[in-house]
Length: 177
Ligand SMILES: Cc1cc2nc3c(=O)[nH]c(=O)nc-3n(C[C@H](O)[C@H](O)[C@H](O)COP(=O)(O)OP(=O)(O)OC[C@H]3O[C@@H](n4cnc5c(N)ncnc54)[C@H](O)[C@@H]3O)c2cc1C
Image (tube, helix red, strand yellow):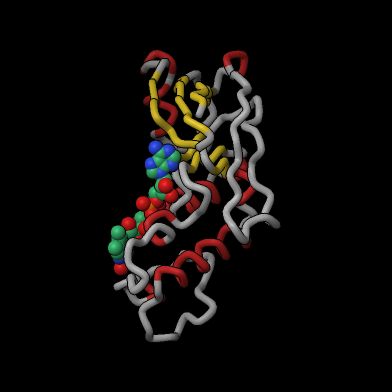
């Protein structure tokens, strides 16, 4: 186990390049995931559950890094305690607006493995695997910038250019087993 500190920043001169280990889930071998965090990591997303995947798709233009503690996408649906766990939402109501369930009209509530399949399909469709660093647990986040650095301005307003300003976050990652 090692602890790396990675910096996601808009001040590129402060960016540090640190390797991260990649754990491949079974069946994901054909999907290329991140082997290392690039030297110009601008946007970090924590977790590759449904929320992290949606965020990665929206931020794709900024080549985000998705830090995922486990070896897989899917979040709670991948790590269900009970084999019988199902979604209690009709599948058409638990759907990305830009990615439909293949069997959308099936009235059965999806099993948790069906939800994982659906989320993996979303990652395939939008080529999201490339952004994910598996086996990377975020253990510390520190905001190093401040309002004077443009943070408030950065995420409000039009949001058209989220990379302006110089806010800087330090993110501590534990990699490996
Ligand atoms: C039993 C159960 C049934 C549910 N049923 C429904 C339902 O029927 N309908 C509904 O709408 N919602 C339901 N939910 C809610 C469910 O949590 C959401 O649907 C959805 O899965 C949440 O997605 P998420 O990406 O926000 O979080 P999660 O799915 O929890 O994903 C979070 C991800 O972040 C990773 N992570 C966490 N901490 C770190 C860290 N420090 N560093 C790196 N990675 C980290 C985790 O490993 C995980 O992959 C249910 C939840 C449970 C537990």
